[in-house]
Amino acid sequence: MGKKILVWFRNDLRLHDNEMLVEAVSKADEILPVYVFDPRHFKKTNYHSFKTGVTRTKFLIESVISLRQSLQEMGGDLLLLQGYPEEILPELVVKHDISEVYHHREVASEETAVSIKVEDALWKQKINLKHFIGHTLYNKEDLPFPIKDIPDVFTQFKKKTERDALVKPCFTMPATISFASVEDWGAVPEIGTLLQDATAAMLKVNTEFRGGEKEALAHLHDYLHAGEDMALEKISLKKHEIVSKLSAWLALGCLSPREVYWKMKDAEASYGIRPYFHQIVLGLLWRDYYRFMFKKYGNIFFKPQGFNKVGLPLRLENTSALQNWKDGQTGQPLVDACMQELNTTGYISQIARQLVATYLVKELSVNWVLGAAYFEEQLLDYCPASNWGNWAAVAGVGNDQKLSNSFDFEKILKFIDPKGVFAQVVRA
Image (cartoon, rainbow, N blue to C red):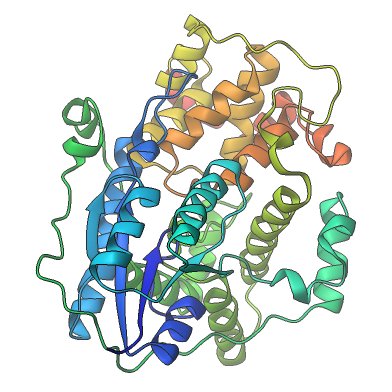
């Protein structure tokens, strides 16, 4: 009987630059790829929101389907199951005579807790759960400082990291894979089986995003290899922020940060340094920064008082101010437009996120945690570290106090719409 390794996919839904998959293929006679739809990801929270909204659920399902199709093209499949991983994976170990289980490590508390439960359950069977890292541009061991000494100020983190750390090359996608034999690989669940009230919510969905590794790589190629005329058009349309919109695929691991970086370097070699390329690297560094801050500080980012010893009490009632903000019915034209775009597409730009978050916290005096929870429901590119880290900064309770004191609604509003043109169009 040959060695079998179970590859537990989570937020790493890709074949390219996937160390976990590469090592499993090299060390096992057969692999069993598995994805588990965990009901905890779709439950209602205490903050009048769902863990995952309909748009993000749709994007997730598309991404899982894409991974399954890629594995099918290689002669295998992806086993799809619904339930708790800590119950399902030990059962699969027995059923398929698994020698070891591989997965990618996460940094936020809920995701880490699931890993611990799985690890404990497997340990009772004397099976090892091997952890991999693959969500960041820089590996933690390649940083110029240990986690406990990472600068809290982003600009210092960026400067030292770019100067003293190197981005590793991508892992080569396996040319062939030997798969375990499975009678029933499972069906893709419908949105309605995962979510409550999904039918009504689907009526609002109108998004250009489609999940999956192939879509991610195609979007990256189109963005990097757009002609100069298109590049100039991007700049003129949104001069305050050039938006690559890669973050949704990065969030689910359909796209590797290192793949983005090295493909950008290839484009630079062909076309020279385009003015918006640096925004890509900046976005990747921000993602790394907050993930490493979560490693450094843990659950502090989820607490209403954050890094301040004195914070506002968290009121859990669903106030009219909160609901109007969610619905894009506050009466502030640009805020409402941004929120309506978020609700229908699952995406708004970073500066738009700062605008609506600052309005909720500073103008409406609603506790920031309720806004962060709603973004968790709606954002296609939701990552616990980036989302909660950014919201804590806006609320003034983040770890980088220089950043936390920089958010002012009127300044952001004037930056986006300096002449009030947008407001005039909306009122007309």
